[in-house]
Length: 187
Ligand code: IMP
Ligand code: MG
Image (cartoon, rainbow, N blue to C red; front, side):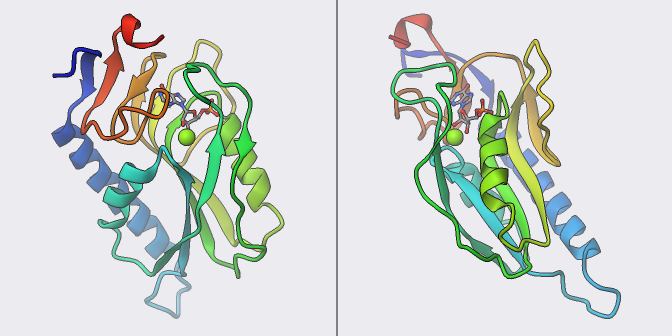
């Protein structure tokens, strides 16, 4: 294991199992949204928040047997070596009109909730039938944020984590597990 890693918080088998469960739950809920006279779920537009959601997204959507499209949005709140949120910066933009589709925002982690709130604001007024949120991780903060998600993979303690898409200074996204870093690695 890399010397900079402190410990593995969630291993790859546990992640894989949970991602499958989340996809099943999302697919069931989309199916339940289908009108009574139609066997088809309404189309789904997934809005992944780049870059952190990229690995989670790739695994999640391959378990979704649905008609779906992707519209990417880039949000940066932990620039460089920051390990606390530095304010939200939107780096790409969404279509003007979602055409009445259901929207599912996908992100790696829900921390202060500022990122999800900012993305929800971007989607508002662009003709989405409804907006739900799916995050792999939810950090338990001392002061509970009032932002929540319909689909949460794991509750984790209030620690800085990397791997499976999550980064420190742009690195460690390729680790297959969710890990904590040694203090010496965060400088
Ligand atoms: P929020 O806006 O505070 O909810 O933070 C969410 C965003 O911050 C996520 O999309 C992540 O990119 C990043 N983030 C929050 N906590 C961590 C962490 O522990 N490791 C890596 N990135 C994090
Ligand atoms: Mg992010």
